[in-house]
Image 1: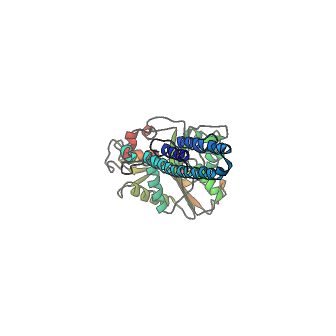
Image 2: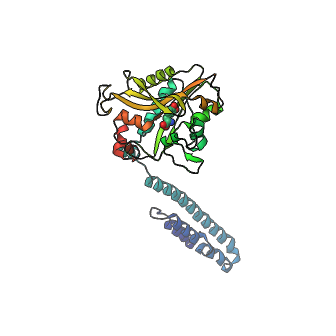
Image 3: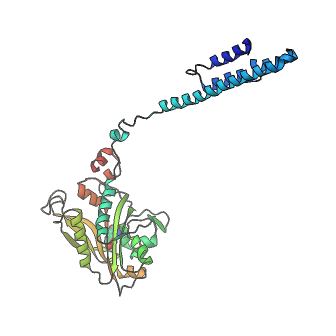
Length: 343
Ligand code: DAH
């Protein structure tokens, strides 16, 4: 190899000997300057025609050897460049897995108090053999009222201030319509719970336009009011404590006959009388009754053969009693100071 060619090779090698501050694009640029159409190497090949014919083969061989050396040098540099890029990337994106995670700063999320109470109540009833069957929040007049023995223009409709979407479609005011949906599909024995959101045009410290209810329905042969009382007492004792007693007061719901309001001995004072129970020792928690024969018949269930009981309770009300919460709005304002207490 003559000196000129050797110098050319050395020169190329030295340009790429230090890659530490070189970008991949720069390396490619040097490569095309060294081996491309306008490179010195290509010019050397072009100059072959000025060389005497007998020296040409040797000269050609030297230039080819030089090209091979330069190509090898670039292959080597490219491999190193690839490794360097990967190393830089790993270094830059390194994660210190020993650092405390955000959770430690923010606090871990947890269930909303209404969800907690709903889960607890459903667990108790599931233990008594109830199954959970949910229904739609947007209902028809028929399921929400008509089928439950609340005819159009009947004064009983005033008991539930309703958000109508059209004359016939509305936001359900209670979870009771799902009683009808379940009974239409299924013959007794029925033992079901329906939890969910309900809506009423109502708004004060103990009422919210949206709140939650759990509905219960049992239909079978020989079901009596005593079954209702026994079941609700077992439920109340599981939710509060074994000393909790239940009391039935006569009431009216168009879909039950007889109808009752159910009181529990006050969980705060145990029945002695306190501020929570307004000195009476009792707290009203739910409405219930024996399913009206007309409702059974509306759903295609024989009221001669079967009887049933039903109940409906407001979850916010139960949670307010259980945790001593003074205002229903606290459930829906999402103030972390309030919610954190239920972790
Ligand atoms: N649906 C009633 C309400 O929202 C509560 C209720 C009362 C449900 C008696 C029942 C029942 O299933 O039997 O006010």
